[in-house]
Amino acid sequence: MGCFWGSEEVFRKIKGVTNTAVGFMGGKAKNPTYLSVCTNLTGHVEVVQATFNPKIISYEKLLEYFWKNHDPTTPNRQGLDFGTQYKSVIFYHNENQKKTAISSLKTAQKNFKNKIVTEIVKEGVFYPAEEYHQKYYMKKGGSSCSL
Ligand code: MHO
Image 1: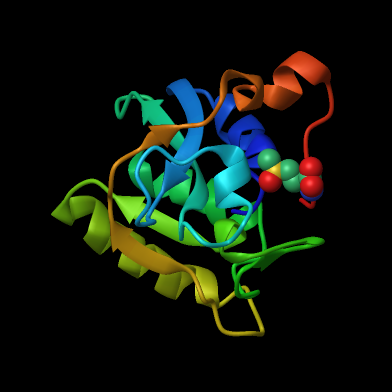
Image 2 (image 1 turned 90 degrees about the vertical axis):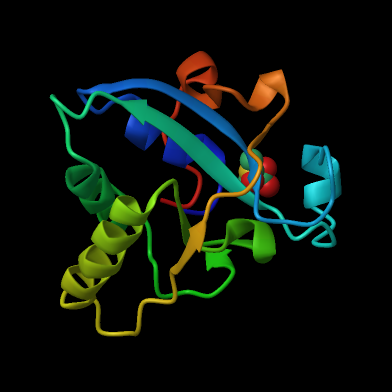
């Protein structure tokens, strides 16, 4: 969804989401840091890991927040932020989530003129980002970078 500061705020505020954390996923380098990811060489993406109570909110509903809170039609870019770390991607944790994400993408496409470029990929290792990136906007105020 682009810069993880804003994405985390979106998910943190949803009722039924019990925890959020920001980190990096999907690249090759081990133990990436924010600075290394910014070189565009590690292949990692800025991600939010949202833990939720499915009795209160469904995975499907969470995906609706995902589509509504960024532009999934711009490759490797979210507003002013560009680079592979900002690409739009859903890392699924199981086959059910994969199926739900694929059908959710098809439904969401109806709301966009341009083609959705969001990738739907099996989860990789979640490397937590540095502490100062965690719940960044909650601590500093503000709610979005490019959103
Ligand atoms: N536009 C922001 C992005 C920060 S982010 C954690 C900046 O350049 O600081 O990717």
